[in-house]
Image 1 (cartoon, one colour):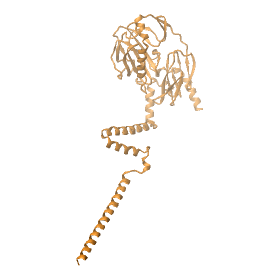
Image 2 (cartoon, one colour; image 1 turned 60 degrees about the horizontal axis):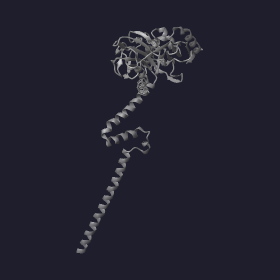
Image 3 (cartoon, one colour; image 1 turned 180 degrees about the vertical axis):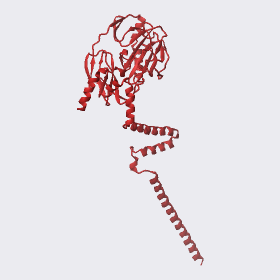
Image 4 (cartoon, helix red, strand yellow; image 1 turned 120 degrees about the vertical axis):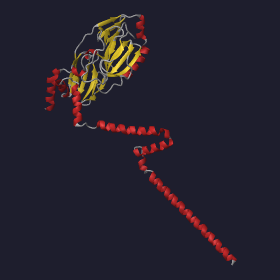
Length: 389
């Protein structure tokens, strides 16, 4: 009887042990199934983990934020910035509405001053303003289509403005006179003889010209400043360029200059003599691209007027603006002086188109849009009839 009870106790214990094993095994199976199910739910299929999938980058951003919480804000800003930029690009590249096109055309027309001049320009596939020039001058080109111009070894892209596309074309002072084709138009360059100027300076003044290392350093600074022009005209439609100061012309544009008997190049600016301290004013609206003291030109200012056109004011005694300032036509930007390579108080003034100095006389009391020759009426009408045919 005792042995029978012992047998039943051992059997019961064995059954309990087997039940515990079954429960443990079942629990393990359920745990594995649940874990696999969670991984499948949270992890995307392997095909979505390619580098081209935006979901992958978003997931990576979340992981990086957990690893580097201090960088999370900058990561998110970067993602939003890229998305915002791409949306802007799509919007900019989409076709404008008819109302927007009409507004752009009306704005563009106001720059030409008269309805006749505006009609002449807008009705032609290519417009040269003006069509007849001299060496050292500059022209403003308009095209109805986005394009570029290969001119004198350089390529000039046309930038959108209004309903057209524009660029300045500088005419080298050493170019051969003759007729040149630009688009569908012909540019006539007439011969011009420039006078010769002989300048005598002291040895100290001449030594300024010999510090080529410093001059080259300054030139790099100037080139960088003139390399970020606004992609639009910064001067108002009804704002002709003004003479920056009153004074006596001592050296006109284009003179061939010799310094102490040595050829020094062409004087591609206007020099006005005036008492030191005479106010110097901005010739038109723009942004100060550079205001600094330079070895050769002394206190100097360059103003960006948009579309790669800059006005230059040098040898001043004092600067009254800083780089980056927005200026209005007539604002005082400095005072007449005799700093740098100079023989007396004066202002050296010129314009630069695509980093080429051009005749400033063309701009004074007018704007490039008014350079259009109204006599082109018959030529444009003939071109329109040929296109219609």
